[in-house]
Image (cartoon, rainbow, N blue to C red; front, side, top):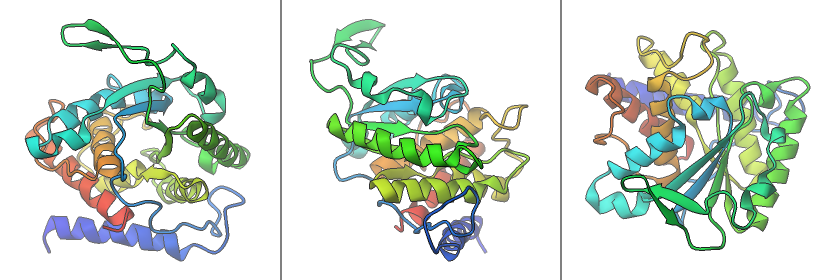
Length: 284
């Protein structure tokens, strides 16, 4: 069987496994009663965001920030699809933080974050007044969604921040995070928690954590982690960025000219893994 077929089968198997565990909403992390529908929203939103605020922690800001790699990927798509993916990203991250550390409402204050941008040769452009972001992509701390004490806080602030984001005219989204390298069993529990948070709040979920799991299964020789076995290596950040672009914009990263300096074969694998994971997760 061709490797891509095997990977696609693995993606679908993961989603079916999540669905098979469903019965009621989660009351505790890792519970077998977590209801995890195979898809929250389809890949690619109806109105692709032109500006995204990334809210998270060091999982986002490693390797010169996830949003920077997404921007480079969107610039590297074929000309015919580039207009759909054109967007501006701003990252607001706090080391070691969870969703409860962030005052998302303050990020929308007038003349605050996003008031100006650096463009061209580091020129400053003053952006038009008003709402600066079409969407907010949020993530919790690496263990919080499945932690015995903090999982309740995860769902509480997922709801609170989603309401805040919508009250400010933007779309809430969640970045599904990945398991620790030495604790692969976290993958399914994290996927279940983020999928449920997306379902409860009608929010788009980017399945980066599942993409990590699938890549580790099919190409364990490609190291997605730094020495602490938690934070992403450059390959890990690139995989997450490919998954973000594929999930939010519905545009395949396969063949993208931006490779983050990774070997071509490695970049190709990560691009294909992201695309196949997104298609399986969103049911396309």
